[in-house]
Image 1 (spheres, rainbow, N blue to C red):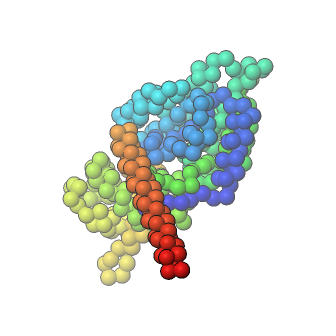
Image 2 (image 1 turned 180 degrees about the horizontal axis):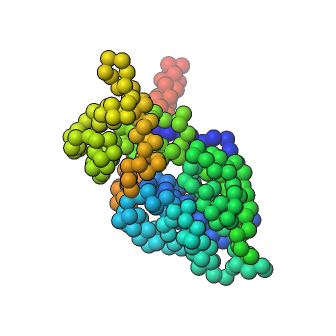
Image 3 (image 1 turned 60 degrees about the vertical axis):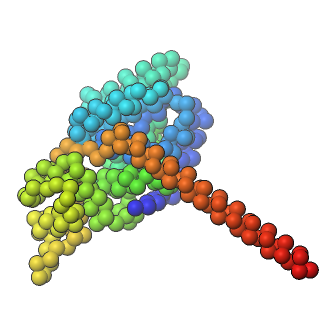
Amino acid sequence: MPINWFPGHMNSTRQAIKDRVKAGLDVVIELLDARLPGSSANPLLAALTTGRPSLKVLNKQDLADPPITGDWLDHYNAQPHTRAIGLDAGDKAPARALIKACRELAPLRGDMHKPLRVLICGIPNVGKSTLINTLVGKRATKTGDEPGITKIEQKIVLENGFYLFDTPGMLWPRIAIEQSGYHLAASGAIGRNAFDEDEVALELIATLKRRYPERLQERYGLAKLDERTPDDAVLEAIGLKRGAKVRGGGVQMHKAAEALLVDFRGGSLGRITLETPEEMTAWRQAAADAEAQKALALEAARLAEKEKRSGKRQSASGDA
């Protein structure tokens, strides 16, 4: 499912990050969705902030599968100049751990003469504004359940010598990893006009059948499921249980898809993680291989066209 969702304000966000890096930046906090820690990591942000210490925060960990969250924390903590912690943005005490972790990443900064300059970023709807409000103890930023609430950069003083620069949620112009596109859409990070909810719901069902079939059975009172059960049959059964019926006994599949996505985003299906570090590594490699093959095909087509034009010119010269 190709997804290209890059509203105008995201271009200004990209420029704001570039300007902040030039002005001086000590640590980059990237909020990730603990249910999709690989898909929610922004490669554009990594390119813009190369060389800066990074704190990866797996937000909404209370909605994610604990053992897999542990695997992701190990994965990120093994990377150079990187720390990773799990967080529930609604819990004030763990939120303060951000300040401690940032000071450990940049130990030579953090007083009035050399303030610690921290940029906090994340994909849309990852819970960043809620987290900041928890950190400062007041409503410092607008919050909502739609992507794109924050539109401009904000500077927040969390402590003496600790400056936090908040930026709007930002995706990247082209999501090359197909599975990431589905996961981001399912989480609510992408504007609803940019994808087909029915298709996303079916892909979510395929993942849940493989990893958490009992959650579907418990939530919707379904018969025992396995990977052989057709995805559309599961979605239809969900629609019947949720009252998405039409005259004649059919099901409004779109309403069934909406119900499933709302339940997933709100945590009604239980603690779920859609991807592992190993899966993400394999998907990323497959996407890179596909891009390389596409580039080779385009180059071959370009050379063939060049030879064709050259042959025509030689033919025309011979006729003359």
